[in-house]
Length: 371
Image (cartoon, rainbow, N blue to C red; front, side, top):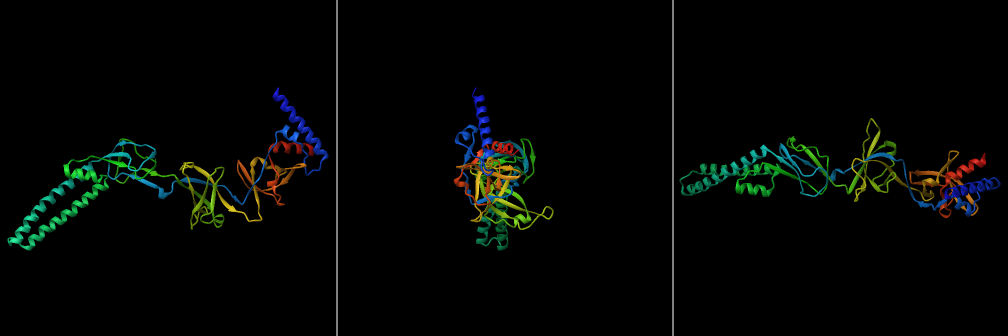
């Protein structure tokens, strides 16, 4: 019943509007409040804007290089355990366990060097006493001292090698004190962030320096875009940028000074604050460079549904005391939600509500009366 009643109101309102339009000047469609209510027309007050986005270039979201860290194998070996596959990690959190025969061999070499050093130091003490008593030549004393110096350097070198293989200072201290070898090394997160691009599974054999995973923070994100040379000349560092159909804003952080000879495009990087992780690495987006309008170039932001094409001309309907007044506009920017327009005659739509719901219906009535 309600549906039939609503359709009746629509037909009555449409008929009344059509009849009124025939008798009214072409520039304005007279409407009463009752007709507006019956047709369910809704209006929106235009918002004045001082800047506008341009062409929406295809782009890709990535993590800034400065916010990435590589998790690599410090020694060749076997992947024994993987603690984290993906997701949020904390600095020093265990990630991957590697078992390595080379790690055992390096520890044994260090312990042998320490043993040789301990013996050489004892010999040096004895040589020092003999040299003081005149029973040992200076040449032999210096040779013994030189052996101690060489072994000290070798022991430090082997110790550093074990650090590079992933053993901590605490593990080295325990190894030196207890002579207990460790066959496994645990790789930890180098920083807080997200673990991604894990490249191994349990049981894999890896070489030293092989990249196993990445850890990066996404509280700040970069969007990479390739821009034609002529367009890039108009850009500047720090210029605002927006993502098409996304409520985020960033800034240009880098403009390459060299164009790709094949594509004649320039690489541009835009930085966005991303504390809530709205933008995901690898996501494909469309980037717009925001330009400020001159003072005389006033523009207005309205819902996209308020702009319709009439005979190929973008048009909006202003609500005036006399009714609905169609006005041609210049569209500066448009997405699925909002459009930024400029009225050639500098009319101020901020004082006259713009028809945003039902504009297509009104256009149909206009077309019908014109026929």
